[in-house]
Length: 238
Image (cartoon, rainbow, N blue to C red; front, side, top):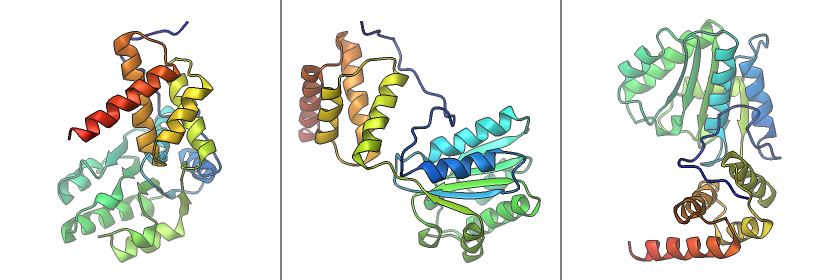
């Protein structure tokens, strides 16, 4: 019998909850090294498409470092950064630098200088540094050339989960996190009728899950078809 909850369960961003596939196994391995205080490697850059697990890995590193007794570990997305001063102040007393979405850095000389200052402070003192963005280091816009070179000195991993096997595993993992059973035919329907973007795949499943919750019905093929029709109708009305 399917259980229903008032609110969706939010999975913890840990290495144990990370869905491993061929396209992200190297990223997971490198992230574990950065999270290990006994490992001398202290620099990682992760890149890949939206929804591929970059943020999950950064937050998993943060979780392990905090659990290991590191005080003042800071995770920050560049979506939240407004000024160079804000960036510098946020990491002033941090023990590790975890910076996400660096492809979103603005075309601002002060911001580039601020990030270079922060990076040098951490890298020069041997503190752990993990950064993530959509693009490989050399393709990042508005990034200081010196910083691009430094990123290439460390561990660099591309993460991607857009193949069908990986996408199927992700769907099953999301269902497990929500503590619901999803028939194989439902998973196959979502795979066939959703784009290869992992973010779209997750959004499609979440729409089915919300419909299931609102109607107090099990997730079945008729329900997922109904959800699909509602999504298409909503897109047509925009």
